[in-house]
Image (cartoon, rainbow, N blue to C red; front, side, top):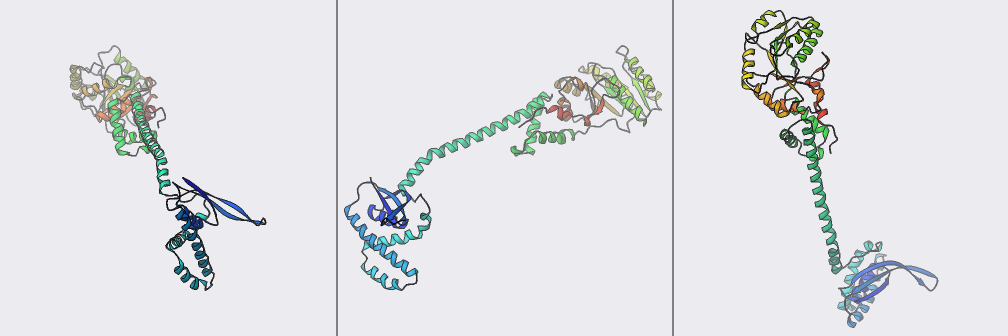
Length: 422
């Protein structure tokens, strides 16, 4: 390889000399600005250009390039004079054309091309490289581009894992809140369909969606103003009697309705006495109904009341026989509303089985007790969503009537989501 340095006034001059001396295969390796002293008095600015070509340069090509350089420079000087307004170009140009050799014509052509690019080359320390240099640059960039593609793939994979982790967190939060994995997954799938952009997913958005699509679909409500006979059914130990006392106290304190109590629980010892104690405290009438005779006589006895709350016996209602007895009891009179009372401490599967068992009875609303004894409240949402039976009241303690509230005011979702999600 032959390497040469050229000190020139500008890049067009460098291109002419390099192509003329080293040939068309020459490449420019670099350039820098230098100062050249003249007569030890002053220095002028020049450009030092380093060029190279593979192999040796033929002597003939070098000789021709010298002639080409001289002719091209004189032609360029003549052209510059013409720009200044002189008439010299009209006389010089024909003579130059007539005396030019083929190599001189080629050099002049190169000068014209180089002149058009002189401004872009004048202020730059990096110059145009040849085809071989482009190929070497491309070869050097290939590993970098490959690395960038790998990095992009890795980022996409990581983002997908992050989204999957967010999905798992949403579902796990619901599972910890008492919602079954199957229903939590169904809710998540529905949420993704309504919000296809993962970038928008967050805890607040998901909680709001659950409120709109789960709670609002089955709006919770209390005892209707038009209902007179309201029965409460459910398994043993869920707190039906205490809940009835709370509801009676609320309506008595409101002063809007005349309240009376009926109990058909003759199986549990002192069950009637417990309800009678509450009736005495509230100063309202209370009647014990014989389950064998039904409720009709007791309801007629309390005909002057605006609201009659009926307490029933807690039995093992997984047994069809017990459900049949309850169905026959309620059929003996006109019951406007039937509330299924369930303990929030029960398993989701047990609650679902009880709802299915009471289906022949005809449950109008769900009432959940003992919410203060567990932090897993999601089962109430799931059960209401699956059965399409609205929520009514929830109880959070034993205090009468304070520990009772409408389900719509209870923060089910705040309890369900405790941690911050991505």
